[in-house]
Image 1 (cartoon, helix red, strand yellow):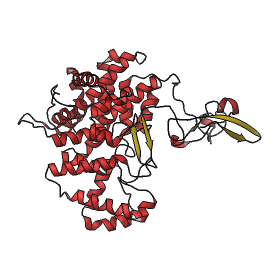
Image 2 (spheres, helix red, strand yellow; image 1 turned 45 degrees about the vertical axis):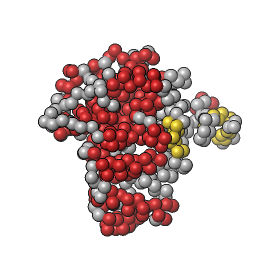
Image 3 (spheres, helix red, strand yellow; image 1 turned 60 degrees about the vertical axis):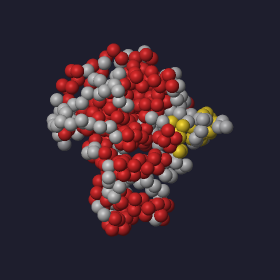
Image 4 (cartoon, helix red, strand yellow; image 1 turned 30 degrees about the vertical axis):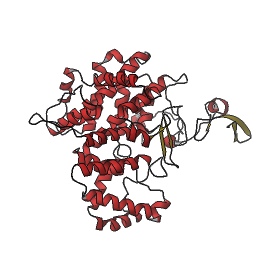
Length: 427
């Protein structure tokens, strides 16, 4: 049971409260430190700072644990569906059969977007990156659905959450279709969430599209694995934007923009590029040596949080094999390179000592490529799945009585006050 901590600065001491969570490290409460001691804490990247209290997701990176509302990610990926996980993240508990039926119907009947919205896509160049389209399109939703942007109204917050979860696959599929010059496909109400997305992405007017249960389940599982991941950069961006009272569509657009960064959402694309660069199994020893010599980076291994095997990677590996077997690419050379690279990295003391274990991005890039998505769509799919996590965190923030506008402090190292010198007098 945490009690208090004492901070000594010079000849002064300050008692700081400590707060226990349900599990994980206790936190030192420094909220009154500036008022009482006239000092700040310095924590670049906020890696040692809890910026909020949350009941949604728990990660133990050392043990390789990821829980959503207490449920292990492996159990959810194996037994649940993405929409059920959406309900869980939003509401805190798994739904009853009746609750899920109502929720599924609500999401399904919100998948269409305003007819005028399709004109918005035409404003982009034909070679625009799907993430550029996603960022602009989601931000523009507030212009079409301004009846649900009052953030102080719980009912409007709920409607916005449902709309975002429902419309994101439609927007993502349109971003994909626009980038390849194909006509948009309207969602159908008789299909599941993942099935609808695959149809909107890959069906064409020239032939009938047939649903594949293996690929549908794989897509649904990929969505589950990316649904939420605690206070990462994009989630923190959504919370920070939301703390000002910005509407939910603007906040999610901010999260998408942050996710676009290669250090965050682009890791699966970079992992696939690495496997392509290696090319064949016989080139792996050379590449491994290059990593040790710091010539290359080992993409898809290691994680900012996980210092053990990423629990999502185990599920993603199984999904990858199922997809490749289904489409006849079980002998895919990229998979052979991936498997051998994983084997070497898990047994080589250099990587073991540095805890560079495979993460979810290592296998997801191969899987998405096999399903027919270009690398430019990888991060867009990530954004689609993560929307429920973002909006759940946003919703939780507004329900927190301790909510304040975000205002990080700084360590100022610039010049002291000085007088202005007129231009003609400057040497």
